[in-house]
Length: 262
Image (tube, rainbow, N blue to C red):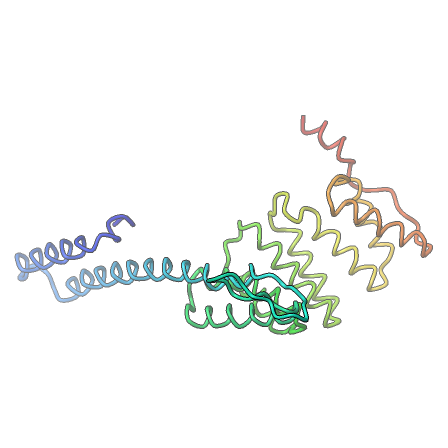
C-alpha cells in the first residue's frame, strides 16, 4: 500500500470491504489464523496512517516551538514595546536559553517517539550546554546521534556538543571519543575537519602534545583553506611556543591530493 493510498480515508473503507467480502466467500476454506493475519494487516495500515499524520502535526508544532530561537536579546533598562503580535525580546542570553529549554522540553514531552522530537533534541542540547546543564545536554545530544538519520550533516554538530559537554565535565577520554565519532560522520562543508581539530585540542590537554602536533600538522596540510585548517595552524603555533617540535605532516598537502584525484 502506497503512502498516497494510506493518506486517502476512503481507501481504508475500500480495503476493509474487500477483505470482509473475501473472508465471507471463503469462510469454509480458511482458518481463524488467516483471518487474524488479514485483520492485523489492516490494523498495521491504520497505525501507519495515523502515525504519519502524527508526524505531520508534530513537525508543524515544532516550528512553533522553535520560534523562541528567533526572539532577539536586547539588554535595556527601559521596557521595550514589541510590535503587535510579537513577543517581547529577551533581556539576557540566559533568559533566552531558559525559554528555549522550556519550549523544546514541553514539545518533546508532548510528541515522544516522533522524528520532530528527535530534531528538537539538538537545539535543546545546545541551550542546556550554554546553561551549564552538561548532563542534560549529553542526554539530548546522545538521543540525536542515536536516532537521527546518520546522513544528516547535523549529526556532526551533535557529536561536537557531546565532546564539549564531556570536556566541560573534565571527562577528556569521553570528549576525545565523541570528537573521534564526529570526524567519522559525513558533514560535507559543514564543520569540515573540526572533529580532527578537536581531537588535537584534547590530546594536548591530556599532555599528549606530540600526538596533538602530528594530528594538527596533518589537518593543516590536508585542509589549509578550511576553518579547521586555520585553527590547526594557530594551535600548532601555541604548541611550538611551548617547545613542542612541529612534525612533518603524514598526509599529502591539499594540492597534491587534488592532482592525484585528477
